[in-house]
Length: 374
Image 1 (tube, helix red, strand yellow):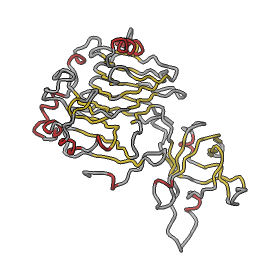
Image 2 (cartoon, rainbow, N blue to C red; image 1 turned 120 degrees about the vertical axis):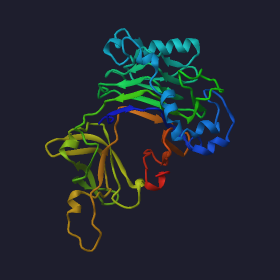
Image 3 (tube, one colour; image 1 turned 30 degrees about the vertical axis):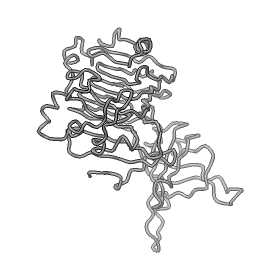
Image 4 (cartoon, rainbow, N blue to C red; image 1 turned 135 degrees about the horizontal axis):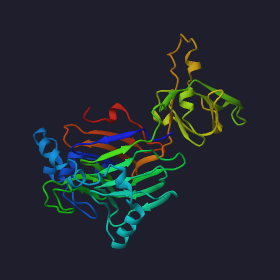
């Protein structure tokens, strides 16, 4: 019921682009030298968009490696000692707001998140968050951080997970393009710096830094198959059978909670639009059944129905069931009908780009035809 464990140590450079189509054009952006306001500067310097020549790998490992002000820090930013007397994030944000500057977690130091009341905080200045030192989220954290860009050269860590009833959300917004300026090679905003990188709109950039998120029980499966359904009679409007309960594997059920969101995949070839979402109203551990809020007359392919001998038709496989609820979330705020989530490793030859058609509230229609470069 929580976000899968994510322990990422990217070296030399990787960026997530939670961005619109226009920001994810890849090489096409190299022809665009339009000035961009805010944190962007000029977009699309061709020499900087390349970044994929293997001969440059040693140079990039130096440019995008861990910061010396972190590796030489005493105490180490990864130590518990660093968290003793650490700066509170609310204090750091208030100071930045008073100075009308962006939020920077200083290199070689630790900052602890102290928001526990589900506050929504829009970061001041240009809205960007620069984690050069360590930004630590204790289990009591509960906050939404609205940001235009996130740059991680130090350590972003949630080492003990987030309490079940809390949520930490990084919500990216804005239409300005951004450059990443390596801390030890560039002055932020210096358009003449040869080491800067065009990272598009709404980026989450990990450059020589670490993202360490441990927020799930490793024994909890993220998905299972639908074994059977339970019904509560027929619909008074169309006479169809109404489904209320869903029988699932015990291991999966033990990780679900009331009010969690569940998705059941389509049992046809119609695609993702035929999926079904529900909210858990009750859980019966004895019968391994969850009950949804309300009921539905939709027909589901189950393990029971797939075991029925039917020589005249193609075999029906049971639908898959997955938990949608997460309490550590990175998101790009929706601003266009079609948006992209792109993961880019600058020293690699190929980009991988997944496309989502945002025509419903679920935005995870990933198919082989949506993947470019393999």
